[in-house]
Amino acid sequence: MNDKKKKVVPFPNLKKRLLEKAMESMKERKFEEALILFDQAHDNSFAHSEVELGSVVCLMELGRLTEAKNRCKKMLREDVGDYFHVLQIYITILIQLKEYDEVKVTIEAILQEDKIPAEQAQTFFKLLDFARKMLPKGEFEEYKEAPTDDTVSDNLLKGTVQEQFGALQRLKSLNARSYREAIETYLLDERMHPILKTILLETLHDQQWDDETKITKLGQTVLVRPSKMDFQEMDPFFAEIGNLIERHVYSENPSLFEALKGMVFKYHTVVYPVGMNEENASAWAASIHLIGQQLYGIEDSMEKLSQLYNVTLEDIEKVSTKVQKLEEISYLQL
Image (cartoon, rainbow, N blue to C red; front, top):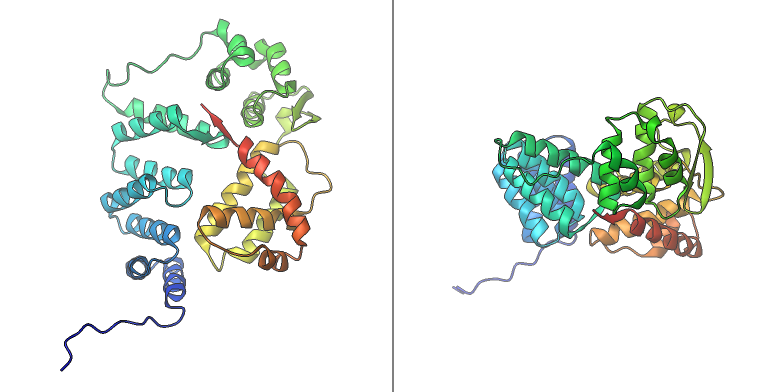
């Protein structure tokens, strides 16, 4: 009898099928089954980021939070998947575990060292503030006080990005009308970050700022009435992009769809309330799909995406330059 190990030859498309079955089990909320399938896909070294993220979600749903935390931490350390998407999941797990000191340390390190997506900055600052409040008194004495009333205008117009953000946070608890001149100047200044301008408009909306106000973004100036703006509803152009991506991606790869949906929201936040005149939504959807796949380590040809979205290669290439520009703008050092 031959005792030598026989070489195992996997069935054709086994890796892809394992991932598909795992996704199906997740949608049916069969998390134990999905986790086993993800682990098998992991052993076959297939679609690493999707497999790891799927495993983390299953562990969370099963209440195995410490395991989920460790898997997430490993993903962050090895830069697997979309970093800030994984980071948000990691922070969520830490809060569920009531590990507030780790939340504080993690977010402070990110704010000091990394470029953070601008539209997520407010969320991270709120989480940091929450974690500090949950810690025993005396453990967060290094926390800087909000700027005094006299410094709001100076920080807004002359400060660093972080000081501008602090001034915007301070304005939420003040009467913004007292800073009308600084606010109007800020909104028209092309040098100011477009997402910080969106945050300011949200504050004006919350304070029922009913005056028509000019805002400049990406070389365009529009007139808005903040009290009438709807920050919950997406611009029709970006909503159409989201619908196209959902139609072509969601059933095949829910994890990728969530990442792409986040990208669409991010770009909408950069642009809003300026419109995207005469742009091709299908070309934008194809370009965002392409870039999202690259972030997830999924290879797909531009030719295939051009057929899927019924656009030309030239359309995708042209729009991809604009998407890359928005991607760069959507990150800032805080």
